[in-house]
Image (tube, one colour):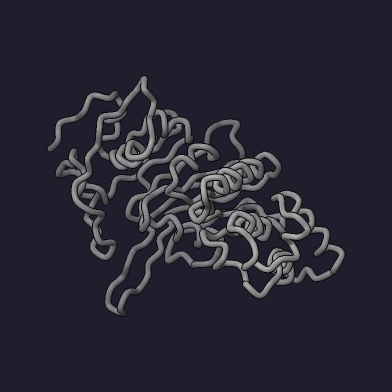
Length: 319
């Protein structure tokens, strides 16, 4: 943590999550992942489907118990909120919207009517829900309104941290822009920590402060959003960003063409999880999984050739 930056709200260290598959195999969905979330910031957790980012989010809020590793909070009893990808599936279709928003209060033992009404109206106003929205059933409302209701439900207990798991994926472009604007406003209005889990690179570029890039259950690069987009270092980060975005024209990275498909997580490669696809892999890459280490400023990269990639855009010879 750099001098002058906020104290971490939560620090995850060496998180690991395993799932038994078919009674005989173990799937390692999250492999020794360490990061921190600070108050008043949005951390973007980014990666393709199957990278483990949603599993990390569920471990963070306690929906899943990590197999190993620790979560260290700066408060004794942290309050957490979760926003899911598909609001029509996460909201009870028989509850009116105000009832869904109030449900976490009842679960926490907060049932005094005046307090419940005050809190529901407060978060409804914050996220832009009308009285008509609050009295409606989910089936009669648009996806954007339902996602705003989901965010209100996550906020109603005044949480320390909110994890938003692909909150814009089910939305059309206009609704997506509205929800992203709301997420950005939450950072400005409250001293909570926010984690935005997404594969939508334009979304994370718009609203996040820092990024953590995941591949096959591991973190491969972290840093400020501006630094990572201006100069991605890890081959996977480069490939991921150049596939969807225009990068810094003054410092264009070399093209990265990853070979083959993402390996089966039940049969992880030894060493670096990208080595079987990386055009610049060395024999050394198969010996041990490289740890994240500081390369440039606040960027941390898990690659044995990180210093070579960092020096400039000249492409390294393929091995």
